[in-house]
Length: 104
Length: 528
Image (cartoon, each protein chain N blue to C red):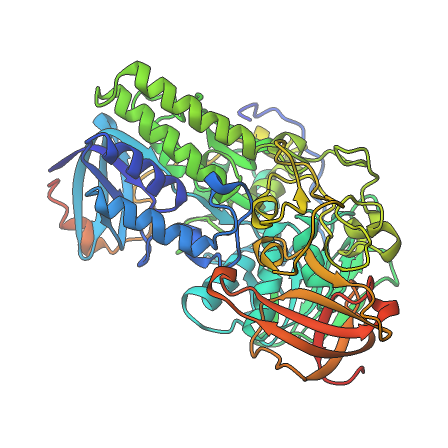
């Protein structure tokens, strides 16, 4: 996926581009497709660029959907994309609780 | 920091089973679960499970959960609820949010048994309130006693879609239709048949075009798809519904495995991104195991065995069990797992089109397309025979690993044999007494007792009935066909309820004898 010379087909607007894909962060299909053409080829990049999967559900709803959109745009199979890096906290948590973590 | 021999993330069927095996060997085990109730998905499963006796066949899912939980607590397993594992770090350290605090714990071994989450599909209106996962609907109904809606369309005919559709009807919802983009019903035929005979139409090769509504779902349009999954113009059908349930598969929740540094693979055969595990469920990180749906989507029954294997393997690793003993125990579990992974729905059969049963009988195509076996097709299966007295009619037409009916009959009328996936057949020599044990024992609700000719122009059909309120003896109503269409008037001549039937009531209805092999369900009220 890190081959930045990958040739993409030109971006063509689609009738369902305004469909929300990531509900928590309200990111549309068009924004995700656009991001691929902006050079975001991995799910981690897409996530940092758009915040898909960074909301309350932490990607439980949209991860697979985002993956299929990005894969289609790149012309690869979804399972070639791998996944975005998993890191703590795995679930949304209040900052005040996290801040009190004394390592005990 | 707390220290355990084994830390288990997820108190579902895999996690609890592993905890039991590990604790049995003297290990100090903790199980963390983010939910308020333990048991994972088991506590939502109010239907009877398939399998053989050692796989908890004909026991309802939530009762299996209760058994596991009781066994775990007897063995001293610490089950911590509302405990969210938010991170996993080197040296097998986990951070857990419990209440308002984050605590740290270390385990000599860790089992990740976090299960799966529901997939979604997009269509215009998919974010409207009223579009929910089928699992969510099940949680609302069966855990919280809340009706998800009144009129429901189900998308997906896998076992989740079929089972939840039936449960929605049991809860009092109207299921207007089942739709699936696939050309064939994906789940067990017997689950489909019990939904179809209630009158629910199946639309295969159909998907949702759009959901309608301003601030909540008020309707849905489905349409037929062509070979390229595009909607065929003019094929659209509209339903007034307030709820759309999506049962379009599950994805492993494997992020913790990824974070722990386990080698991962994106494997479509396992339905997603999963840790690579060996035969004991151990990941590439020594001492970290994964079991259940997190390492590949399967059934709860196989998750329990995978959990047991991981628990035993961890006990061997830490020296609580000798290698020889452990190997022997694991071999037993593997044999049980092998028993479950047989038949037409085994993991290895995914995507394959099956045309014949193991017995060489042509599969019911009507079942795959419309959810019910046609009157003509049903006659070719070994469970369907005719005789003068009362006799069982087993409309079991697919090879699935399940055999409680064989043991249920004290007179040995029913034969499956030693091969658990074989279709049940009727022994013509054995005498049926009409006790009904087989009807109640069949997890697929596919066994009927039929007296084809009572001598007065009528026939009597005894069927499994799991709806409330129960019809009363003497009540008149309508007999429905396998398709759920009204075929004739019917009178209830008996309703049997017994503890041993475990809430499967046996309803006996009298119909004109020409409908003996056609009438398969009873509905209150006159034919419409």
